[in-house]
Image (cartoon, rainbow, N blue to C red; front, side):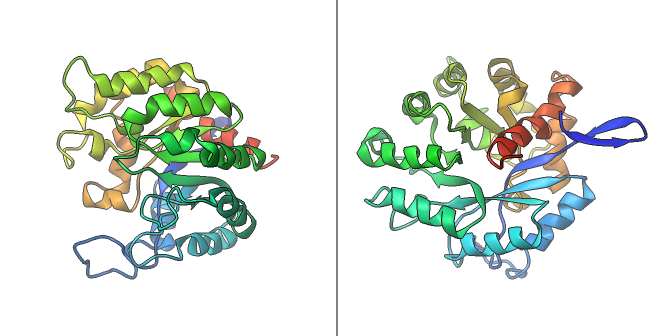
Length: 295
């Protein structure tokens, strides 16, 4: 377990697995602080306030920010010990989504940016056929060759496709965003959650313990007590070494503070032992990242 020694105690490392940063706020409605709300300085301030050691920047070249990969690369250059870049490669909002040439675009992005992973947001109506076709297989073979982590925003209906992909590329860690799309509102027999839990049998599929505000039936209802049964199910199936806490900052500000995003997991999931919480808060992701940096 990584950490630092302080007064003969090991202080666990905390790594935020899911953050964003933009020099121009991309969302509607407009905000009065559009040129500062999403900047890297805001994220670093929150990290410092709450003793978060590092953060993964999930790039998103969305409205007003087509240069987000370049912006984050420059931020990582300035703060190499605090920030890790997962570049936007052919996400659902791009013109290149699932078009020919994806493998070359991934390789070019890896040459241009200091990445240890990439992010790929999948359209809700996607049937998953691209992932198992020639283009998708070549794309993920390149990810394996480059030793990259695949950070995916993917619907639960595509978990069977993800399992087949992960089995084909066992060296690629597949990290699903925001509890893999689980929802507290889902009624028994919980088909969405069952598909997610079935992926626990595939050892290189991991889950971000982020997005409590998406999973909950009420997005602002901190501490999101209705999410507890989902967190418990994910913990019991995937275990602490395949779960990674994330804040979703700064998007999360519409629902709660950065501290709330941390404490929703750290304080309000008492059924997880402290040792395992330390793994989920940073230990698990630290090892995944170290394996991809030669550390």
